Image (tube, helix red, strand yellow):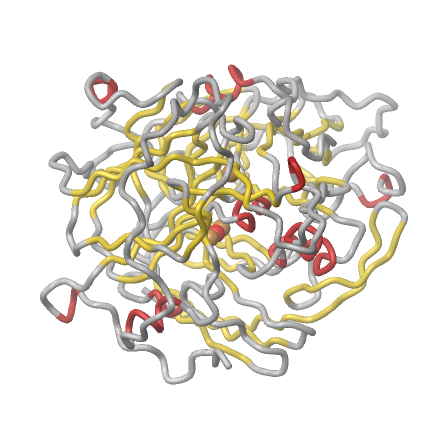
Length: 542
Ligand code: C2O
Ligand code: CU
């Protein structure tokens, strides 16, 4: 593969949306940020210069970084923040990813404004497993906050823990026609009639899953999370925060304007930003803008069935040039219950969470506490007192996860607990959604790996009967999976990438409330199966 060099300058820039102007942190002054485009197996050096006002880190979402957790990016997990006035060069190492991924800030809520596409074309001399599209276009769906993100995150983490809803969703940086002061700048994709376009769709939204569709046009989904799937033709997609999808659209309609729209899927009892962002698919030609532009038919905001119907159709492509390898003999079983809980309000404080407590979130009843120095450094240099190795493999068995919660304590333990895995372990993780706090979907994301989604279902996971229905033939290979509300999802992977790998809900609110943990995959027996030595200048933690 080739080597590419990028410079990312983190700096404040001024933007006007929804009738108000603010300055916000950007990469190179743009929103969304710059696109990285490479071929499969290439290597990328990104020199991140922080000219902003606070420490930030950058993560390459879905890039596996074999043996190289040093450049992965999550703050206080694999590195300390890049301080203002300093820089850090990431060595971003690809392996078999192909399709669309993305990059984003991985500290505080900075990713709201600091994110962009990471496109991986087929290796030079190889082709797509579908007819070569006429052109490609990145579609980044994101969140817009009128306020300052630093203030909003402080509020989200303060004792009150308000919901901190965004004020708009955006497509390629623009809210679209349905929002005030936005019509002039709605994003338009100019197309020729009778061609096939490849849309690379990224859900960079902070807290809401999204339905997306284009009026009068079918979507054919051919890839997800940097891997190909069997083509699925559909009127809408459901894309959860963190996910990416490669979608073919054929411009087979009469020359006109057509709305594309993205509207949230939110569980009814949970507060979310329930507003719709639009952009325009505009055919080239000699005609005038219609007074009524047709709008796609999207499922309604709490349509769980529509979500499941779409998601259950996704299967790995599986071909000679895109084979898969699903682990069969599992050596490490983890069963992880996901919950929204509470922690007691500190004395002499007033907390606005339920019953005057603080809202927290947990995995196996441990709400993750971010350490002061990064876990990777502490592990590599054997520093004690930074993390504990006793993340439980099974939830405490004191409640019926998807049953009645009355009388069950809402409180969770807290700590910086990691799960140790041996190199080469065949791992199965069953994520169990619960009714604790609020039943809702959780987009669970693992760094350093893609994993096979072998099963999903409603209610409590049954380890006798549910594995019988696993798909071990063509399960999707992804880095983020939506665990259904009141249900479970089973994933499998081989732990063949040694390192320190974050695993968390990609709803930013949940992640910052503690819905996170870390997998440490130990070194194998050889140098080629061990963590590389660190680069000369990691950002300092002092
Ligand atoms: Cu997209 Cu841990 O991140
Ligand atoms: Cu969540």
